[in-house]
Length: 397
Image (cartoon, rainbow, N blue to C red; front, side, top):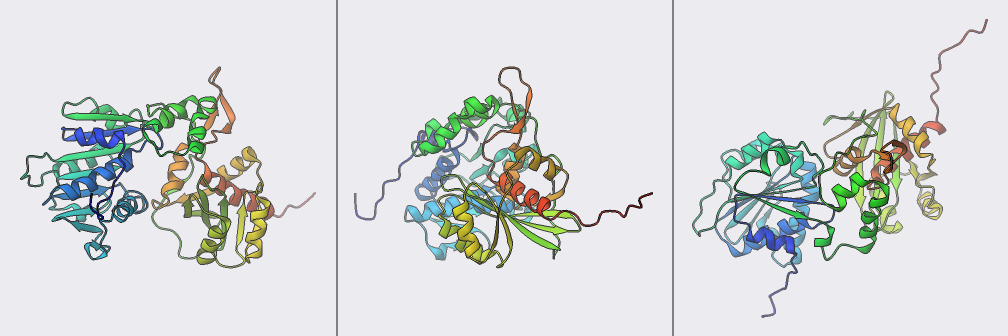
């Protein structure tokens, strides 16, 4: 091995995808099963070992693509020593290597897919797409082949929706390879996350089946069914507040919540692991105006005091979970497609179920709820601290 060669450690999921000889390859797995990482590695392997090919990496919405598959792909190119800034067209979101071209495009940019033919397509978070989206993409799987390989489309997803087009229409077809994986297929998963996953066996059987075992389960009882999505937010707000959920191994989350005419508009500012409090404060100084109201987890008083000394109005959040949820459910709230992690948590934030008799409990499942906590901290704590002043006048007789 010469000095320029590097060793890339691959998973069993990578090897199974490499061996797949069908046009459609389904990667169905639980949380941290390495499915997305492995397909990303596979695309880079093909990018460096084949030539004259066109690749597509896609998600349903562009904001989600930018912070997941697109970022992972570029990060791995850099890690493996293949990245050259001159080959990366950031405006068009393409990367050229070895006479190949990779497009990073979402379905909500249909003009980018017109008159384009691909050899390999990766649909990340494939359950976000519709069957019509999949069918359209498959028609684009018509790139020229000159090396005996076949054109392939790879789907990666958590099996959340038993009635999804993938489960109902694709998984049983001929010419489809189904690769199932769990966190046990990922040699790099952290023990703390394994413990959190395995704790789901006690907390909620449905979540354990989906996120632990990578199996379909009907997860019902969504808590915030009233939150609506829009791509158009107000240009200005009557008031701004911020919700912060601390984390280190788990993600830290910061939400900006604009209030306009008593309506709440949520923007996900930060959702990232491995941040110290200094990192967090540095981000806040760059993205949040001084003297803003910041409502944070009251279990971390020292961190709140540091934020307060950094010229923010940091307030310990009220942590009455059920009362806070009830308060939030009374508010008109809008999210936007770019709130990728917030929207994912919103869909999965459900009431816990008693394992013995199946009754719904008055508490949410405590798993992947960092944005949901930040939302409640801000809206509920601000709401009870600043009650509405527009009570109707009452004439006592």
